[in-house]
Amino acid sequence: MTIDYAQARHAMVEQQVRPWEVLDARVLEVLGTLPREEFVPEAYRAVAYGDLEIPLGHGQRMLKPVLAGRTLEALRPQDGESVLEIGTGSGYVSAALGMMAREVLSLEREAKLADTARQRLVALGHNNVSVEHADAFSWETERRFDVICVNAAVDEVPARFIQWLRPGGRMFIIRGRAPVMEAVLVHRDGDDVNATRTRSLFDTELAYLAGAEPVAEFQL
Image (cartoon, rainbow, N blue to C red; front, side):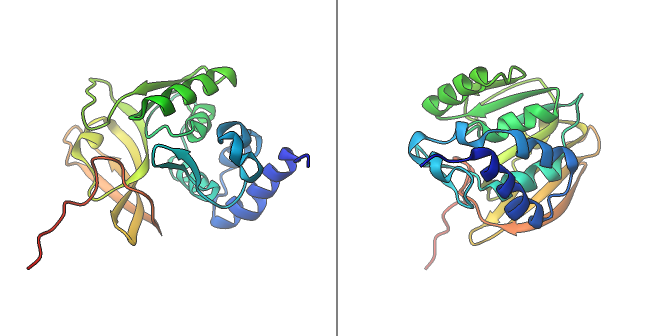
């Protein structure tokens, strides 16, 4: 059976993403043109536009289209902005961010996923997106970014992530303890890493970023 991916992409936007309050014209245009089927493992291409998390191997899964859409809607990267992405995965969100921003640096702790995503992004012409094999909790940089996108959950928002934000920048992240988690947008208002505002966006549940899981509590 031949799949009409263009039709599936349109249906994804109109039946999944838009009804979930994703209304920004640039976000809808990106999701309506970016070939999601090119970012999923071959065995899952037939369900590339389904409302589900697609396994990528190494214990990781591709975000549902609605969550990818809500992430982009919250961040709304602009043409002149630099983006740090934590958790490359398939490279799909990386590509979407790159279509909206000036440049994207994406960190992926699994070497094979990083290599695959890097090759895929180059092949598809996303030349302003670079992928680095690195663990966000040991990675060091003096750079500061306008936007940070974290594609996994944390128990608490790490201070080191906020430090990478440029004053005036913003970060999308999901925090909390399953099954009670919330997506938030963190704004850094000044040079002080504690000068932040946090806006709650919506409730959801997502796998934890490695190294950001809740600490086990001893119970009598």
